[in-house]
Image (cartoon, rainbow, N blue to C red; front, side, top):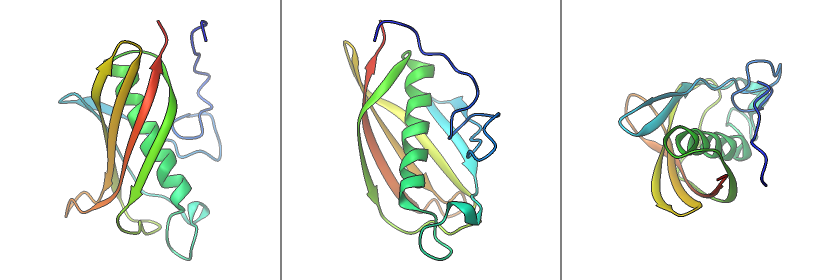
Length: 133
């Protein structure tokens, strides 16, 4: 892809105009991207547990924000997720993503979803991104 990506604020994960989206708000410090939120029942899989695909989306999104902010525009080419514990509907959590490795046009990022108080890790992710240059 040679053209730049554009943001129309309709992204399912972070768009402010998407009426059914997650509306993740992302901040940056210490070379990491952070987001804190809780999810409603509309995002559940099994009763009272957030769907694993939604958790994968959050991991992908927080890694993409880290790559965009610290490296540049990129798209995900692979995503690996490891689930460690269920995320309860309505439970506040934080997603943290960072760039782990940068080689030419390929960037590797990692992320976690964890509870803010106990810092219990609920899921981990690792992705490869291809940069636009």
